[in-house]
Image 1 (tube, rainbow, N blue to C red):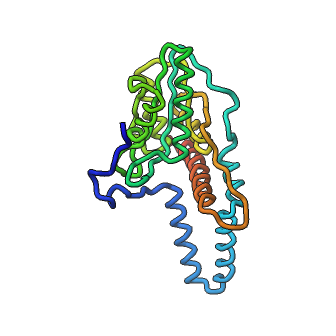
Image 2: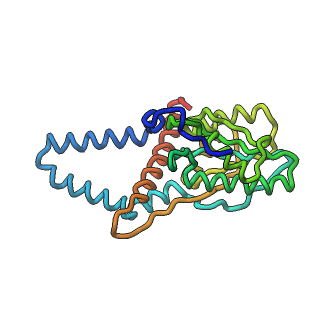
Image 3: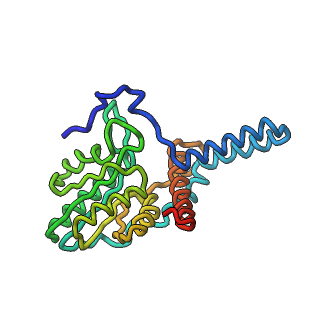
Length: 261
């Protein structure tokens, strides 16, 4: 099977971005920053200096590195996965990207696919039943869901279609846990293995524990800041990811405290 092409929708409608809590907070901070510049003339020079310094610290990696340390308390799994007679490997989605008009998994997700396929192969050598549950909907509103986009890549790594379960409705990590929990209620598994990136694992475990699930964490990859003098775009991306996860963890605890979760 080939990755799905963007043939049926116009370019603009398939490349819509989606609003996250982090983006809303960032927009609010920027709005307050520009309001302060307009209304408070004396603050303009120090605000400009602080803004430039903050941007450089993030882009050069010096502030991004500690943010990643907070978001990724573990960069790799302590122990290999253990398999039982009936094992489910849960792989979480992490978005999609366009490569020459073809919808593909981003690099972090390719690592999740590889780890899931490797552990599926190891599971089949010892267990009676092994399944890979791929959880990821379409929060970016693109031509296909995350789960459907990842499917061909798992098939190429010799995971048979009969052992793949697609959950393609979730838009957040919380919905990943909720929707996978509903799937697991219909089947009996002796062992659950959760595959995702180091930065998403702490929040994912909180969400899965919320639904009474205690999967084994299996980290597929970790992000690292590249320290230096020159700004790097990758460091800004990593900083956004780290802040998104840290805000998500704080949001989880707030929602739990007020009874929303």
